Image (tube, rainbow, N blue to C red; front, top):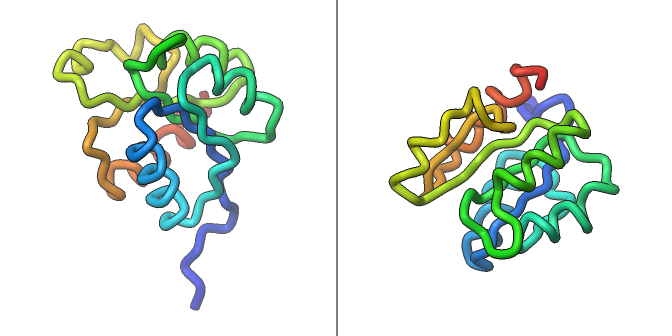
Length: 126
């Protein structure tokens, strides 16, 4: 019996640390999702990923050139839910209701946290 989800979720992500970006892709693929685009910063995400058919976007809060919240503002205009990821203690001060993100998760990211955030984002109908 195949327990894979009915549809693969097409995901884009922006993370400036290459090792973390690779880990993110691996974890998302382990969950059965398809990572369409993995960018090094928010500007790269907008330039390289937004022409693709994407269901969900993960953005790191603190990135050079364009941070996650600035990138999220562009992404939500396309009707795509955004999940904020951060390892900074002050990330808890980001008020999700006042920002263009549906939820946030903390680094180091666990596969359970990813799955929960994905479900929350998809249920939000953002």
